[in-house]
Image (cartoon, rainbow, N blue to C red; front, side, top):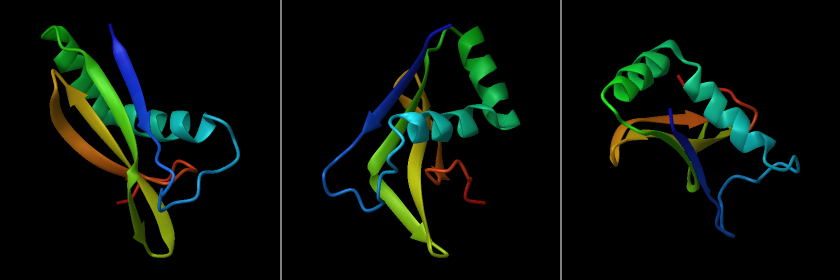
Length: 94
């Protein structure tokens, strides 16, 4: 089982990055990974020999309802499965 986690940070990120080291990145990816639909997709992808990757795109942020969300992508075999929006605190946009 191989899992990759990537984060892309640019100086002009629209959402402020919390002063917590890499914890906000781990929190965002873990929030996505533990969703039942994500676990099912990842299991199926691995059974087919796929490598599951999660990418946090800090330059692709979104503001909604006064909150800032990072883009977290779930990918396998170079293809996007789904895109999620997660706050640095780990809340998922519904």
